[in-house]
Length: 144
Image (cartoon, rainbow, N blue to C red; front, side, top):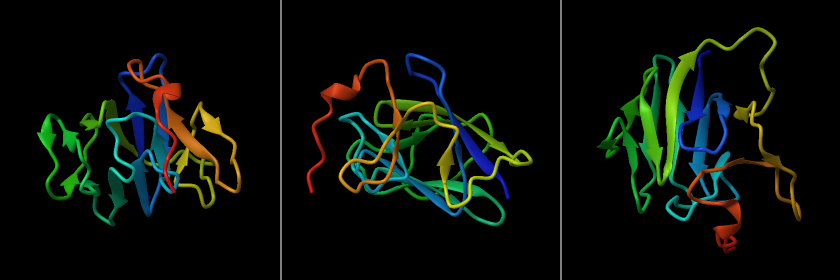
């Protein structure tokens, strides 16, 4: 099965994340598989869905939209290597690859993250993406 690698293009340091089936929900909410700590990112912003023939990104009615190569996503958009995704203020380059031998992460849909925060108060570990213009401390705490 194919995996998606997202490289952060506007972070203070290089960051790459491997995403795996069946889907990865991206947003700033605690329930998301891939959390981006930025005000411009909705709690449940978008999702990447793995189909047998392709991988697609879908906006989840986010406030600021999801963009692929500068075009706003209004329905599912098939991704290809080299695509540029913008989620709020976060910008990623897409790479579609066959997973490397021995790199599978049983039950995990996001891995190879340089920034992983331990669970707090029964919350699961979360992937955080640092952005140059949005220090993590400036994000208001999520509401429950």
